[in-house]
Image 1 (cartoon, helix red, strand yellow):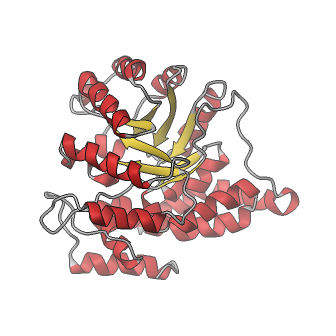
Image 2: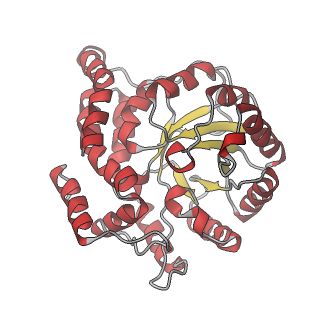
Image 3: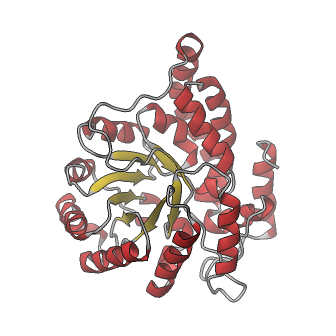
Length: 333
Protein backbone atom coordinates (compact mmCIF):
# COMPACT_ATOMS: atom_id res chain seq x y z
CA UNK A 1 0.00 0.00 0.00
CA UNK A 2 2.90 2.35 0.73
CA UNK A 3 4.10 2.00 -2.85
CA UNK A 4 0.61 2.86 -4.12
CA UNK A 5 0.47 5.98 -1.95
CA UNK A 6 3.85 7.15 -3.21
CA UNK A 7 2.81 6.48 -6.81
CA UNK A 8 -0.41 8.41 -6.42
CA UNK A 9 1.56 11.31 -4.93
CA UNK A 10 4.05 11.28 -7.78
CA UNK A 11 1.22 11.42 -10.33
CA UNK A 12 -0.60 14.27 -8.62
CA UNK A 13 1.09 17.18 -10.48
CA UNK A 14 0.10 15.66 -13.82
CA UNK A 15 -3.42 14.84 -12.64
CA UNK A 16 -3.89 18.26 -11.06
CA UNK A 17 -2.84 20.00 -14.25
CA UNK A 18 -5.30 17.95 -16.27
CA UNK A 19 -8.06 18.69 -13.75
CA UNK A 20 -7.31 22.43 -14.01
CA UNK A 21 -7.60 22.58 -17.80
CA UNK A 22 -10.43 20.09 -18.30
CA UNK A 23 -13.43 22.29 -17.37
CA UNK A 24 -12.28 25.10 -19.65
CA UNK A 25 -11.07 23.23 -22.69
CA UNK A 26 -12.04 19.54 -22.48
CA UNK A 27 -9.20 18.76 -24.84
CA UNK A 28 -8.58 15.17 -25.84
CA UNK A 29 -5.33 13.48 -26.71
CA UNK A 30 -3.48 14.69 -29.76
CA UNK A 31 -1.02 12.55 -31.69
CA UNK A 32 2.57 13.85 -31.51
CA UNK A 33 3.62 15.44 -34.78
CA UNK A 34 5.33 13.05 -37.13
CA UNK A 35 4.54 10.43 -39.77
CA UNK A 36 1.41 8.31 -39.58
CA UNK A 37 2.28 4.96 -37.94
CA UNK A 38 2.52 1.98 -40.26
CA UNK A 39 0.66 -0.08 -37.65
CA UNK A 40 -1.63 1.72 -35.22
CA UNK A 41 -1.05 0.58 -31.62
CA UNK A 42 -3.43 3.03 -29.97
CA UNK A 43 -5.57 1.33 -27.31
CA UNK A 44 -5.42 -1.28 -24.57
CA UNK A 45 -3.73 -4.68 -24.81
CA UNK A 46 -4.06 -7.25 -22.01
CA UNK A 47 -0.92 -9.39 -21.63
CA UNK A 48 -2.72 -12.71 -21.31
CA UNK A 49 -2.09 -15.05 -18.42
CA UNK A 50 -1.33 -18.56 -19.65
CA UNK A 51 -3.85 -20.97 -18.09
CA UNK A 52 -2.50 -24.21 -16.66
CA UNK A 53 -4.33 -27.30 -15.50
CA UNK A 54 -3.85 -28.70 -11.98
CA UNK A 55 -1.12 -30.86 -13.54
CA UNK A 56 0.59 -27.67 -14.81
CA UNK A 57 -0.10 -28.40 -18.46
CA UNK A 58 -1.28 -25.60 -20.74
CA UNK A 59 -5.08 -25.69 -20.61
CA UNK A 60 -6.20 -24.71 -24.10
CA UNK A 61 -9.89 -25.14 -23.31
CA UNK A 62 -9.64 -22.60 -20.49
CA UNK A 63 -7.62 -20.31 -22.75
CA UNK A 64 -10.43 -20.42 -25.30
CA UNK A 65 -12.95 -19.69 -22.55
CA UNK A 66 -11.07 -16.61 -21.42
CA UNK A 67 -10.73 -15.40 -25.01
CA UNK A 68 -14.49 -15.70 -25.53
CA UNK A 69 -15.07 -13.50 -22.48
CA UNK A 70 -12.56 -10.92 -23.67
CA UNK A 71 -14.20 -10.77 -27.11
CA UNK A 72 -16.83 -8.28 -25.94
CA UNK A 73 -14.25 -5.82 -24.56
CA UNK A 74 -12.95 -3.24 -27.09
CA UNK A 75 -9.28 -4.12 -26.79
CA UNK A 76 -6.97 -3.04 -29.61
CA UNK A 77 -5.45 -6.48 -29.45
CA UNK A 78 -3.89 -9.09 -27.18
CA UNK A 79 -0.38 -9.84 -25.99
CA UNK A 80 0.66 -13.44 -25.47
CA UNK A 81 3.81 -14.79 -23.86
CA UNK A 82 4.83 -11.71 -21.95
CA UNK A 83 5.88 -11.65 -18.31
CA UNK A 84 2.31 -12.33 -17.17
CA UNK A 85 2.09 -15.25 -19.60
CA UNK A 86 4.93 -17.03 -17.74
CA UNK A 87 6.89 -17.01 -20.98
CA UNK A 88 10.18 -18.26 -19.45
CA UNK A 89 8.39 -21.35 -18.10
CA UNK A 90 6.99 -22.51 -21.45
CA UNK A 91 8.80 -24.85 -23.83
CA UNK A 92 9.28 -23.52 -27.39
CA UNK A 93 6.61 -25.86 -28.78
CA UNK A 94 4.14 -24.66 -26.13
CA UNK A 95 4.86 -21.03 -26.97
CA UNK A 96 4.05 -21.58 -30.61
CA UNK A 97 0.91 -23.56 -29.88
CA UNK A 98 -0.36 -20.80 -27.58
CA UNK A 99 0.16 -18.23 -30.34
CA UNK A 100 -1.60 -20.46 -32.88
CA UNK A 101 -4.53 -21.07 -30.53
CA UNK A 102 -5.03 -17.38 -29.80
CA UNK A 103 -4.71 -16.45 -33.46
CA UNK A 104 -7.45 -18.91 -34.43
CA UNK A 105 -9.83 -17.35 -31.89
CA UNK A 106 -8.91 -13.70 -32.48
CA UNK A 107 -10.69 -11.58 -35.12
CA UNK A 108 -8.34 -10.32 -37.81
CA UNK A 109 -9.03 -6.70 -36.89
CA UNK A 110 -7.44 -7.24 -33.49
CA UNK A 111 -3.67 -7.33 -33.27
CA UNK A 112 -1.75 -10.22 -31.78
CA UNK A 113 1.56 -9.32 -30.15
CA UNK A 114 3.73 -12.27 -29.15
CA UNK A 115 6.76 -12.36 -26.87
CA UNK A 116 9.76 -13.76 -28.72
CA UNK A 117 12.77 -12.46 -26.81
CA UNK A 118 15.52 -14.94 -25.95
CA UNK A 119 18.97 -14.47 -24.48
CA UNK A 120 20.91 -14.79 -27.74
CA UNK A 121 20.31 -12.82 -30.91
CA UNK A 122 20.20 -16.00 -33.00
CA UNK A 123 17.60 -17.66 -30.76
CA UNK A 124 15.52 -14.48 -30.72
CA UNK A 125 15.49 -14.30 -34.51
CA UNK A 126 14.51 -17.96 -34.80
CA UNK A 127 11.72 -17.57 -32.24
CA UNK A 128 10.48 -14.37 -33.90
CA UNK A 129 10.26 -16.01 -37.30
CA UNK A 130 8.39 -18.95 -35.76
CA UNK A 131 5.97 -16.59 -33.99
CA UNK A 132 5.22 -14.90 -37.28
CA UNK A 133 4.53 -18.26 -38.91
CA UNK A 134 2.21 -19.14 -36.00
CA UNK A 135 0.14 -16.02 -36.64
CA UNK A 136 1.61 -13.15 -34.62
CA UNK A 137 1.24 -9.67 -36.09
CA UNK A 138 3.98 -8.10 -33.98
CA UNK A 139 6.96 -9.47 -32.03
CA UNK A 140 7.44 -8.16 -28.48
CA UNK A 141 11.15 -8.56 -27.74
CA UNK A 142 12.35 -8.27 -24.15
CA UNK A 143 15.89 -7.17 -23.38
CA UNK A 144 18.38 -10.02 -22.97
CA UNK A 145 19.64 -9.82 -19.41
CA UNK A 146 21.50 -12.93 -18.26
CA UNK A 147 24.87 -11.26 -18.97
CA UNK A 148 23.51 -7.98 -17.69
CA UNK A 149 26.87 -6.30 -17.20
CA UNK A 150 27.73 -6.78 -20.88
CA UNK A 151 24.43 -5.40 -22.15
CA UNK A 152 25.73 -1.98 -23.08
CA UNK A 153 23.75 0.41 -25.23
CA UNK A 154 25.88 -0.60 -28.23
CA UNK A 155 25.31 -4.31 -27.59
CA UNK A 156 21.55 -3.84 -27.31
CA UNK A 157 21.38 -1.67 -30.43
CA UNK A 158 23.24 -4.39 -32.33
CA UNK A 159 20.95 -7.11 -30.95
CA UNK A 160 17.72 -5.35 -31.80
CA UNK A 161 18.97 -4.19 -35.19
CA UNK A 162 19.76 -7.77 -36.16
CA UNK A 163 16.33 -8.90 -34.95
CA UNK A 164 14.57 -6.06 -36.73
CA UNK A 165 16.43 -6.81 -39.97
CA UNK A 166 15.52 -10.50 -39.88
CA UNK A 167 11.97 -10.33 -38.56
CA UNK A 168 9.12 -10.82 -41.07
CA UNK A 169 6.81 -8.85 -38.74
CA UNK A 170 7.20 -5.50 -36.95
CA UNK A 171 9.09 -5.46 -33.66
CA UNK A 172 8.18 -3.73 -30.39
CA UNK A 173 10.95 -3.31 -27.84
CA UNK A 174 10.18 -4.44 -24.29
CA UNK A 175 11.85 -2.87 -21.26
CA UNK A 176 10.81 -4.40 -17.93
CA UNK A 177 13.55 -3.60 -15.39
CA UNK A 178 11.61 -5.12 -12.47
CA UNK A 179 12.14 -8.55 -14.04
CA UNK A 180 15.38 -8.10 -15.98
CA UNK A 181 17.26 -5.61 -13.82
CA UNK A 182 17.98 -3.77 -17.06
CA UNK A 183 16.44 -0.55 -18.37
CA UNK A 184 16.79 -0.20 -22.13
CA UNK A 185 18.94 2.97 -22.37
CA UNK A 186 17.33 6.08 -23.80
CA UNK A 187 20.04 6.51 -26.42
CA UNK A 188 19.44 2.96 -27.61
CA UNK A 189 15.68 3.57 -27.89
CA UNK A 190 16.25 6.76 -29.92
CA UNK A 191 18.61 4.95 -32.28
CA UNK A 192 16.38 1.90 -32.69
CA UNK A 193 13.30 4.07 -33.33
CA UNK A 194 14.85 4.93 -36.70
CA UNK A 195 14.80 1.28 -37.80
CA UNK A 196 11.97 0.76 -40.31
CA UNK A 197 10.83 -2.51 -38.72
CA UNK A 198 10.98 -1.41 -35.07
CA UNK A 199 7.69 0.37 -34.43
CA UNK A 200 7.52 0.97 -30.69
CA UNK A 201 8.38 0.13 -27.12
CA UNK A 202 6.50 -1.25 -24.16
CA UNK A 203 8.05 0.52 -21.18
CA UNK A 204 7.16 -0.98 -17.81
CA UNK A 205 9.54 1.07 -15.70
CA UNK A 206 6.99 3.70 -14.71
CA UNK A 207 9.30 6.71 -15.18
CA UNK A 208 6.93 9.25 -16.74
CA UNK A 209 9.73 11.73 -17.47
CA UNK A 210 11.56 9.02 -19.43
CA UNK A 211 8.41 8.08 -21.34
CA UNK A 212 7.70 11.68 -22.24
CA UNK A 213 11.25 12.14 -23.47
CA UNK A 214 10.93 8.98 -25.59
CA UNK A 215 7.81 10.37 -27.23
CA UNK A 216 9.50 13.72 -27.80
CA UNK A 217 12.76 12.32 -29.18
CA UNK A 218 11.08 9.81 -31.52
CA UNK A 219 8.21 11.98 -32.75
CA UNK A 220 9.63 12.18 -36.28
CA UNK A 221 9.94 8.39 -36.52
CA UNK A 222 7.33 5.68 -37.09
CA UNK A 223 7.50 4.79 -33.41
CA UNK A 224 4.93 4.48 -30.62
CA UNK A 225 5.37 4.31 -26.83
CA UNK A 226 3.15 1.95 -24.85
CA UNK A 227 2.68 2.19 -21.09
CA UNK A 228 3.57 -1.11 -19.48
CA UNK A 229 1.25 -0.85 -16.49
CA UNK A 230 -2.21 0.43 -15.59
CA UNK A 231 -0.96 2.34 -12.56
CA UNK A 232 0.53 5.13 -14.67
CA UNK A 233 -1.66 4.87 -17.77
CA UNK A 234 -3.28 8.32 -17.54
CA UNK A 235 0.06 10.02 -16.89
CA UNK A 236 1.56 8.16 -19.85
CA UNK A 237 -1.22 9.37 -22.12
CA UNK A 238 -0.66 12.91 -20.87
CA UNK A 239 2.93 12.83 -22.17
CA UNK A 240 2.00 11.26 -25.50
CA UNK A 241 1.93 7.47 -25.10
CA UNK A 242 -0.16 5.66 -27.70
CA UNK A 243 -1.65 2.89 -25.57
CA UNK A 244 -1.08 0.46 -22.77
CA UNK A 245 -0.12 -3.17 -22.23
CA UNK A 246 -1.57 -3.63 -18.76
CA UNK A 247 -1.70 -6.77 -16.63
CA UNK A 248 -4.79 -5.42 -14.87
CA UNK A 249 -6.66 -5.59 -18.19
CA UNK A 250 -6.89 -9.36 -17.66
CA UNK A 251 -9.27 -8.52 -14.81
CA UNK A 252 -10.63 -5.00 -15.36
CA UNK A 253 -10.46 -4.78 -19.13
CA UNK A 254 -13.61 -2.73 -19.61
CA UNK A 255 -12.64 -0.04 -17.05
CA UNK A 256 -9.21 0.29 -18.64
CA UNK A 257 -10.76 0.71 -22.08
CA UNK A 258 -13.05 3.31 -20.50
CA UNK A 259 -10.01 5.15 -19.14
CA UNK A 260 -8.45 5.07 -22.61
CA UNK A 261 -11.67 6.48 -24.08
CA UNK A 262 -12.02 9.23 -21.45
CA UNK A 263 -8.47 10.42 -22.08
CA UNK A 264 -8.98 10.53 -25.84
CA UNK A 265 -12.20 12.51 -25.40
CA UNK A 266 -10.60 14.98 -23.01
CA UNK A 267 -12.76 14.03 -20.03
CA UNK A 268 -9.81 14.40 -17.70
CA UNK A 269 -11.64 14.72 -14.39
CA UNK A 270 -13.53 11.46 -14.93
CA UNK A 271 -10.32 9.85 -16.17
CA UNK A 272 -8.46 10.99 -13.05
CA UNK A 273 -11.10 9.54 -10.73
CA UNK A 274 -11.03 6.21 -12.55
CA UNK A 275 -7.23 6.13 -12.60
CA UNK A 276 -7.12 6.61 -8.83
CA UNK A 277 -9.28 3.51 -8.31
CA UNK A 278 -6.97 1.42 -10.49
CA UNK A 279 -3.64 2.23 -8.84
CA UNK A 280 -3.84 -0.06 -5.81
CA UNK A 281 -5.38 -3.08 -7.58
CA UNK A 282 -2.73 -2.73 -10.27
CA UNK A 283 0.08 -2.67 -7.73
CA UNK A 284 -1.42 -5.73 -6.02
CA UNK A 285 -1.38 -7.89 -9.18
CA UNK A 286 2.04 -6.71 -10.35
CA UNK A 287 4.74 -5.64 -7.90
CA UNK A 288 3.07 -6.92 -4.73
CA UNK A 289 1.70 -10.38 -5.55
CA UNK A 290 2.78 -10.87 -9.17
CA UNK A 291 1.34 -13.49 -11.50
CA UNK A 292 -0.10 -15.65 -8.66
CA UNK A 293 -2.05 -12.58 -7.50
CA UNK A 294 -3.18 -11.80 -11.03
CA UNK A 295 -4.49 -15.31 -11.56
CA UNK A 296 -6.27 -15.40 -8.20
CA UNK A 297 -8.03 -12.09 -8.90
CA UNK A 298 -9.08 -13.24 -12.37
CA UNK A 299 -11.21 -15.93 -10.77
CA UNK A 300 -13.26 -13.34 -8.85
CA UNK A 301 -14.26 -11.67 -12.13
CA UNK A 302 -15.38 -14.72 -14.09
CA UNK A 303 -12.12 -15.70 -15.77
CA UNK A 304 -10.01 -18.80 -15.36
CA UNK A 305 -6.81 -18.06 -13.47
CA UNK A 306 -5.69 -21.42 -12.21
CA UNK A 307 -2.25 -22.34 -10.90
CA UNK A 308 1.10 -20.97 -11.95
CA UNK A 309 3.94 -23.20 -12.99
CA UNK A 310 6.48 -24.02 -10.32
CA UNK A 311 8.51 -22.50 -8.85
CA UNK A 312 5.89 -19.72 -8.73
CA UNK A 313 3.85 -20.52 -5.62
CA UNK A 314 0.18 -19.77 -4.88
CA UNK A 315 -0.77 -17.02 -2.47
CA UNK A 316 -1.22 -17.78 1.19
CA UNK A 317 -4.69 -17.31 2.74
CA UNK A 318 -3.49 -14.08 4.34
CA UNK A 319 -2.27 -12.77 1.00
CA UNK A 320 -5.54 -13.75 -0.70
CA UNK A 321 -7.48 -11.79 1.89
CA UNK A 322 -5.25 -8.75 1.47
CA UNK A 323 -5.65 -8.96 -2.31
CA UNK A 324 -9.44 -9.20 -2.06
CA UNK A 325 -9.52 -6.26 0.32
CA UNK A 326 -7.57 -4.14 -2.15
CA UNK A 327 -10.15 -4.72 -4.87
CA UNK A 328 -13.04 -4.27 -2.44
CA UNK A 329 -11.89 -0.98 -0.95
CA UNK A 330 -11.52 0.48 -4.45
CA UNK A 331 -15.06 -0.51 -5.38
CA UNK A 332 -14.39 -3.43 -7.71
CA UNK A 333 -15.76 -6.24 -5.55
